[in-house]
Length: 237
View 1 (cartoon, rainbow, N blue to C red):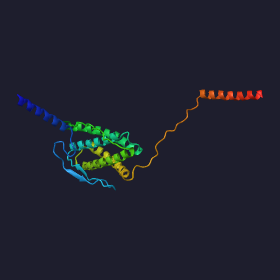
View 2 (cartoon, rainbow, N blue to C red):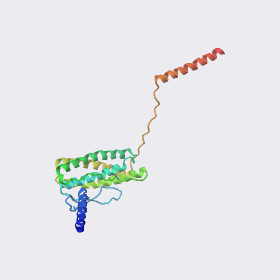
View 3 (cartoon, rainbow, N blue to C red):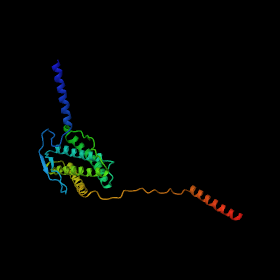
View 4 (cartoon, rainbow, N blue to C red):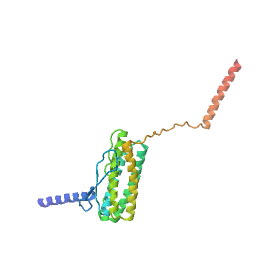
């Protein structure tokens, strides 16, 4: 009896592990559990030395969808972690675009995966946002470097779209993502090398409250009192 219960425990533990492993597909691992080949891609031209990019070589639409979803989750975690810690308007605008566009695209990818591959649907959870520490200028520079590295990996991965048979709607979304990330990468590259462009923080103008008729009446009365006092003094003299 004890041996039987012990065997049941091991079976339950194995089931939990298999269930957790089915929820997340790590980078470089295909949905069927096999390790995908790795492709080496040169990074964008930059004055600063940057590591060589390695992305998994994917051959099926299903694996491509999962990897594209993972790339979006990474970008969203960066944007969420830096929200409220950035002062530069240009960088803030890029964060806003990443949050709005990335969330909408991730929802679309999830909808397609549920419809096209219901047996392999993976939960689109967002892990804890990336933590940024230090002064505002340091956080901004750190964010630029992280976003640039993430965009380089994403663009290298999107190059494989031409080698994978994708449905027309997914192919169109891939092209939209590629164009946006290419433009953002070019700006991030300039900011990484030359720094963010100078800007003047906006200051709120403190406007005086408009004079109301009641205030005008009070002012008129005070002026009339002063005039009356002066005229009385002259009469006394």
